Length: 295
Ligand code: NAP
Image (cartoon, rainbow, N blue to C red; front, side, top):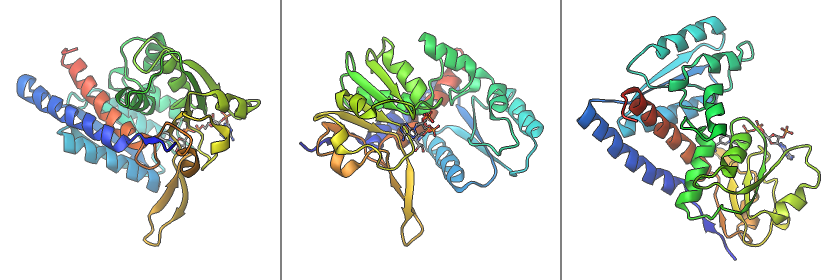
């Protein structure tokens, strides 16, 4: 069997088209223009490219976007003051502070300072708590994007054995929580694996759906998965450089071998990545509608 390739690029494109229409209707009917600010501290090249992709996408959808780049030695209090300024700015509905922050800044303190109504990354404890309770909130972008990918690719999750590898706060933990809820792409029986998991192979082998969010290139191989499994590969690992200086990326799953056994699989790049940025835009539009009292 050769797997169906679940193209995040294609699904993201369809959602962006829908968002573009929604943004234009918001402007025409309600004079509302969603606004997003991205705040980057320092010059990490990967963070720079993520932030620039976010602003470019926002711009293409008609979302007002501002980008602030601060020196790596910016004081925590100055960053907090900037967040506070945007909390009070009516033109801005979403505030994104690009992670990781330099070591001298307390990341939690900064994320908790963002107004939960503008927390379009979905990292504030108020939004995390609401997510766990299944209430309306901003869902974290990567798990949100994976839910959309599963729904729009017609993957049946109800009653499925889902094995998630990786328990980070931004991917693994929220993913597990969302997939066990009574919701689209939910109702699954979820197992969450990590470095202390005993006999990872036994868990992987019985999985109907594997979600890999580990950060180890090509870690999961074909002999560890069952025939017909659906694989969502979140990993983005830089494994080299092309002659032109472009990063060569690999996922956490050995794509070439696993695709021969899986029924469906996401590629890296072009799988989960484009969905993450798209869900940030969706959350920003949701924030604008909430601020305008439209939802
Ligand atoms: P993270 O915070 O580093 O967490 C990695 C998790 O994987 C941890 O829970 C760790 O277990 C587990 N792990 C590491 N090595 C393992 C092993 N050998 N066996 C079993 N579990 C292992 O990572 P993250 O932020 O979730 O990111 C994971 C990957 O996804 C990275 O490659 C990242 O670049 C990528 N990512 C992609 C997107 C996207 O939009 N495409 C978004 C976010 C992240 P312990 O907890 O026991 O240490």
